[in-house]
Image 1 (cartoon, rainbow, N blue to C red):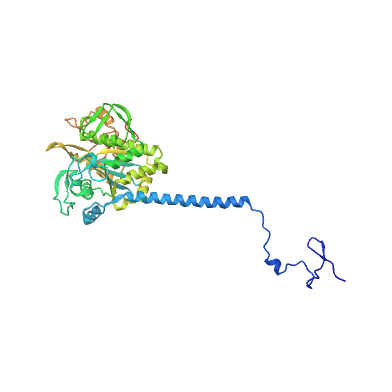
Image 2: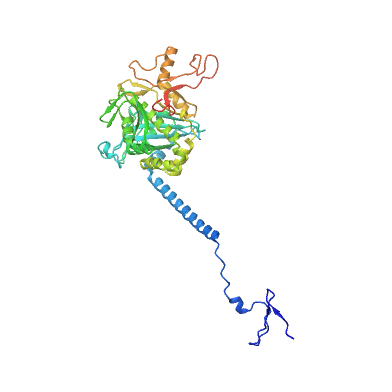
Length: 438
């Protein structure tokens, strides 16, 4: 008797007798294995996840590509000064030995060259000659809790060494105005002159031209200034009303360069104006969160790097970023500006010479990375009245002299009569917190 055959559901089936094969046992045969399985319904969630992953990958790749493009563009903007490196290496044995190894001394040079894109409108390009319109030695403390910017007057009489010139010859060593060094031998000659003057090792240097300065100011949407009287200086292409106002790049350049139709026309006032403006610029960059916002930081970096020439230690975007990052936490009141202590040159009242004792004190403090304190001119004048001292020279020109702070009298040995250590001297200057409007 044939056995009953049932499927997996238990339903009886008739044995296949037409082909003579054995009755089915329910196990799949070869034909069953090769048969295409029935389609399963699509999972909408899994479909969405696949597209989301693909979209995210595309966004990441696009962002990375754009970031790399921006980096390459900014990095390519910077010009490396290889000529200066060669000259400085040749005279390495003459250079000062670094003292505070974690501190940084960076020489900032504002060039008045008319060559280069965008600079021709400021005057005729006479064969690419250049002068240092502004020179500042920026000292960053080793702990990065303070920064001191020391201006060096372009009319200061100094010893300038023999330097390599652009035409391949060498200049003669001479006693001349400070800005002659840059005109004769560029950044290397200026660095050697500064090091000879101060005995401070210059670690890095940056040279920026007119268009670079204007572009940076425009990139931060201008800088606010307060002007006591209307200004008109034809040579600086500047005409401004009195009062509080925001200067764009072109106006700012004229403002920091003007020597006619503003104040007493002296280089002293011009440097003071430059220092206060740079302080206001730093304050705006820091307070507006530019350093923390890539969308706002990019145009500033693009403007700065397009007209920037540096040594090989600062010629990449990563180097400049590290420098900016190290300054990000410096309080604005600790970003200080002052000028080398000087007085009218004895042989020519239109030139300057160092006030040796005060200058020596300032140079030593910067070299040793000791604290430097500054106070506004008005504060010094008031202190001078209280102490019965006369600040400045008989001709009314400030000598930016040093003024000891604290009580007690100085016995000339560097210590107070009470036996306590002499407090840090205070120099005439300003800080970034003051801005241009107090």
